[in-house]
Length: 125
Image 1 (cartoon, rainbow, N blue to C red):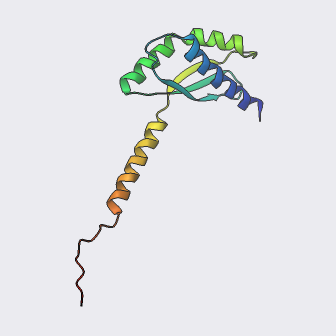
Image 2 (cartoon, rainbow, N blue to C red; image 1 turned 90 degrees about the vertical axis):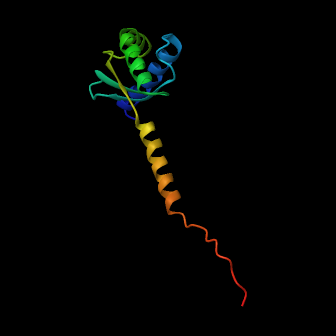
Image 3 (cartoon, one colour; image 1 turned 180 degrees about the vertical axis):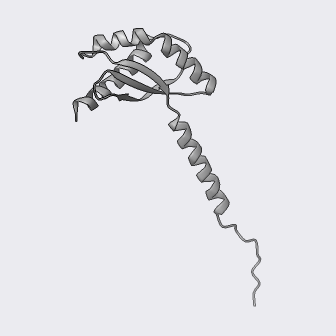
């Protein structure tokens, strides 16, 4: 595993722990850190998150993360030994909702294409 990948995995783990254990903002709700995309020079990290809820919940969560950004970054710097603590950018990740919707559509198509049972009565000859 490359150092870049190891740092990404460690960032994901630590940011997730910080959000769940250190932050007590009620706007966060049911949040999951799904992925961290780190630049090659390890200076910038895009943190993708998913929230169980609607658009309003995503917006509240985004605001809570932006207001706690400095705190999260400081704790990341204390927990992970890097020359530079990456700048964090939080983005919503709706891929799970997208895949759920695709599965619903496929199920509907499958239900429409099922052969219908005939209700014919067989006559004896």
